[in-house]
Image (tube, rainbow, N blue to C red; front, side):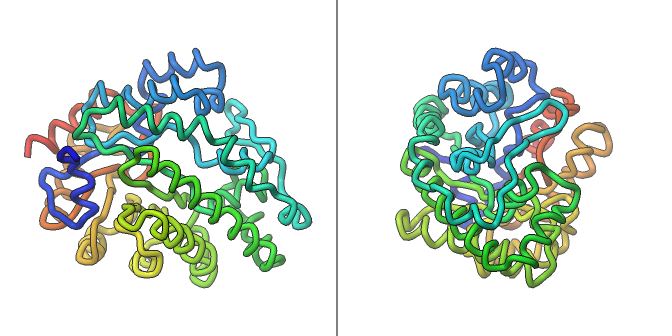
Length: 340
């Protein structure tokens, strides 16, 4: 294998300057992405078209030379494979048919292998097309975050519908999360077998849970995924991004067994340093600093690098890059990191 710096960090090495990629780096801030999405005809059409999904994954690598490429897809392809009526409405985000308690046991996970075959084909094409030194990251949504959309039928500010569902129907929630965990593990295994170097599990809504629910919904299902993936691929490298988990990240890493924890921008760097003593960390620049540029960007980058330079660290944003981010600010970010 070529010298893939991000993989070295996941193995516990300190690499400085740190390998860098950005969540949602293939996205609407790039004119070439907007053109390709227009060509695809729709967001899901783009996700399931191996030619075009490969193209948009490669675009930020060609333009910026990031140290890693992340598969272009979406966390909701799993409920789409379960035939939950997924659509993306412009200006409103994803829409699904809300799931009822009596529908959970009628879900058909076996549809996923065929339905998600185009995504796996994209992974294979990407590994062939990427520079040897570029890490390829696969991913899935964490069961809890995916379940929140399945239960409400859309995104909500605090995922109250899913939280209430869990309190009122704990056994049904447990079954739903178990189904999603098994499907997600199989999906990640296929991505790794197709050529992904590592995978990331996105739990974008972990931060709305209380401590007991976090244990049951964020830690338990992710541990199930990690265990199942490692049973099939013992040396699989896995990043867990539990956004908003704060002080629970230490327990999250210990109990799930992930190799690295992703940090949102609200995680104090002093705590990030503590977490780094246990293994790799990833993050955590505020995406708005990237929009602001100038002194705000420089100071944010420098604080992170200075604090985390002596341990395993992957530089990233604390959440996804936004459409408003100027391309020249991304260039300035990389120049500052690599100039060190």
